[in-house]
Length: 291
Length: 348
Image (cartoon, rainbow over all chains, first blue to last red; front, top):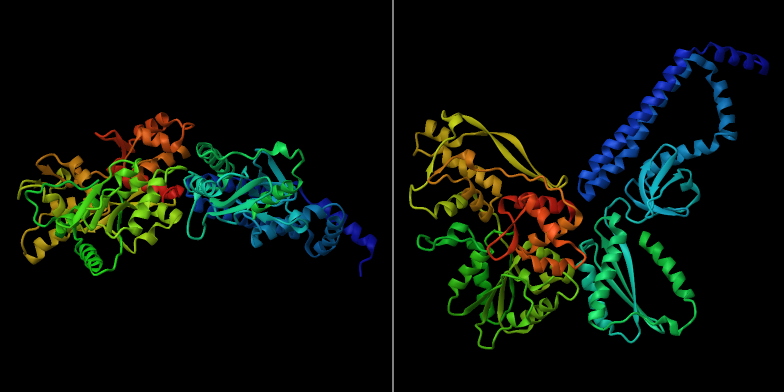
C-alpha cells in the first residue's frame, strides 16, 4: 500500500523524467491533428460549394465526423505517449485529471462531450439554419469545442457545444437545402381578398427563389382582422441562404401588382394604438420560419 | 420549334421517328372523343425533340376535322387563343408554354386557356416544353387537365441515322475514316459523355468499344458495313442523347460536304459559371425555348439589368439570337445547360 506522500513523490519523479522530446512529440501530434482537421474542412467546404444544393449539404454533414475521427486518433497517440511515461501510475494521474476536470476544465470537457453528441446524434449539421440561445444563423463549422454560426447580419457567432444540453435547438431545414419561409402581407380591410390572394400566389410561384414540389407545396392563408387583412404565404426557398431575398422578391412583386389592381396597404394611423397582439404574432412567425 | 425536313423525299417520316405508339394513343383518344369521352392530350418533350413534327403529323392524319394554332411568342391577348364557334372539333395547340408569363399578373391567359379546354366540347391536343410543363404542373396542377400525357422518348440510334440521311440523296454523303485511324482495328477508344447533375457539368470518360462492324465484315463475311458511318452515328447518338434537333445541329456543324468523318462530330461540354440572376434568366429561356429581350425584361422586372445578363449568356456561348430576335439555348449547349440548371434546381 502506497501512502499519500510516497505517491506524490513518485509522480514528481515521473514528471521530472519527462524529456523535452516527448513533450514536443505530443504537441506535434496535436498540431498535426488540428492542421489536418482544418485543411480537410477547408477542402471539403470548397468542394461542397461546387456541388448541387443537396450535394453540398451531404458533403458538409461528414466534416465534423472526419474531424472527430482525426482528433480521436491524435488522442490515442498522445495517451500512448503518456502511458509509456507513467505506466501503471497512470491511474494516479487519472485521479488528478478527474479533479482538474471537476474544478477548472469542466466547461471544456462538457463542450467536447457536446461536440460528440452533435456529431453523432445530429441535432443540427453544417449547412443548417438553426436557432440556439439568442442566435439564429447558418452553421458553418462544428468544432471540438464550439459551433460557428453565420448570422443574417454577417456576424460570426461562436457558440459552445455544451449549449445543446441547456438550450432548445431549432433547425429550419435539418439536412436539406430548401427551407420553409413564412411571408406576411398586410392589406386594407376593404381590399378584394380573392384578387390579393391570387396575386400573392403568383408572386410566390413565379419567384426565382421558390422551390415547389408535391412534398413542398405553397400554402396561402388569409386572416381578417378588425381594420386590415393579413395574407400569409408558406413556401419553400430553393436555397436557405436566399431566405431574405425570397421574402423581399415576393413582397416587391406582389406590391407592384397590388397597386395595379387598387389593393392598398392598411391605414393604421386611424387606430393610433400600438399593435401589441400583432407584435407577438410577428415574433411567433420568426420562430415558425425556423421550424 | 419543330424539326425541319424536306417533304419531297420523305416516306412516312413519323415511321422514322419511331412514334407509332404515341400516334396510336392519340388517335384512339380522338376516337373515344367521337363516342362521347373527352380526354385532353398533352405532348411533352425537351426542346428540339420533335413536338411540332408530331403535332403536324396528327394534323395531317385528321386533316378535315382538325384545326391547329402554333404559338411562337408569349401570348398577351386572349383573342389569340379564342376559337370561333365553327372551329373544328379537334384543336391542336402547339407550344402552349407561351400561354403564361412567369410573373404576378402574367397568368390571366393561362387561366382563360384552362377554362376553355375544360368546358368547350372539343378535344385539345397540346404540346409543351417539359420544363414549363413541370413548373405549371407543380404550381397549378396542370396535369389534372390532361388525362392523356405523352412524353416523347429519345430516338434510337438507327432512327437518328434515318432522320439525318433522309435529307440527302442515296450515297450523297461520303463517310470517311479519320486520318489517324486508316487501319481498322478490333477495338477503339471513344469519349463517352456523362452528365453529372451533382456537379452541374457534362464530362467525358474514355470507354473502349469493340468495333462490331469490323468484326462482322471480317468474321461473318456479311454485307460490308461502313465502320466510319457507324462510328459517326454512334458519336452523334451519344452526344445528342437521342434528341433529333441536337443531333441535326451537331451533324451540320461537323459536315464538310459531302464528307463526314467520326472526328468531325463535335463533343460539347460547357463550363457554365453564372450569377443566380443570369442562371434564372437562362432557365426561363430554356423553359420557353425562345424569348425576346422585351419578354425577358417584363418577366425579370425593371430592377434587373437584362442587357448585362444577356451579354454574359451570349459571351459564354450558351444562347444565340435567332432571326425573330428571340434568344434560344444553343442546341449543342443544351445538355450542359440543362445539367447546370438541374444542379441549381431551377428546372427539374
